[in-house]
Length: 417
Image 1: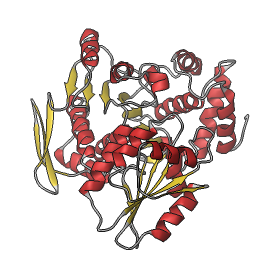
Image 2: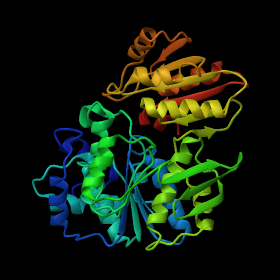
Image 3: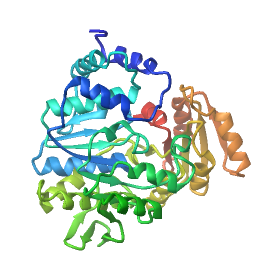
């Protein structure tokens, strides 16, 4: 075996390919053939979108597990441990399982160079096939059409939202990004779109592909019944008295509504009861999505790292106000629309604590401060050498009526959780 520990494998994978991101399916398809895995013995739901992918995967996984199916899930990135990326029946796979499958991939690939993400995707496919899961929920890492996950043909595709992010790879318009995400669709297999206003070119593309499309507020709907329940309906079915998802914020109802449309479309192969749906909604968890950590000063942790996610975060903060001020700890990557993120939250944050991150791609705290000045954000700002120091400063300055918000890059959240 090339390596004996998971960390050794991962460090090596980070250096193997000349670029961190290299979209395309040829390498993954070639290695899959060499691994002789054959077509997967499970049904596949592929989940793409700018935001909401992880939450949707968590809800689908929890609902199908509640119904008694053996599930597999693949997400990225992880928060604390790489193992979080691949789970079977809700349990993260072991270090030993990952090391074993990485060895198999390494021996099979020959001279084919793979990215870190491609290694992980191949590992997920192999491990879920070995486990003989009934259904696999696969989160697309970047875009859709050329993402490694798209090597699998989805029985149903879910597109959660379409916003501006990763423009260097996906294009600078919602239209170009929508086409990339639509690439996970297959002819005559259903596509659900949780974005209520998808670009017209996505509709045209799927119509030409002959992929049936179901769009939020056109083909399926949700309405809050009261503070604790909501109802869902499509043209064929209605569900009443559903509990609000354990994942916080009204934005999660967009995700949950689209998830229930997928569940309906696959009901012939995977019947699910109302009771299963209730259990799934109440038990689905996804770390770092408006995660509240109670204490004398409560702390909210969120991976909002693009304007659309920041707008959703701002809306949820307004839904759940505190008596005092919000102290925000923030760090972000250089390639993000930092102005868009900051402007979404400018009216809801009383104090800013900007953090340097130990990542080459990160934007320095001083540079974030300059962007704030250019956007005339007047709230007090301080810069810190790490997320830990920024959080400690925020917690020390906050009163019992205040709250601390830690958000931005996954690297920020991973230092807190």
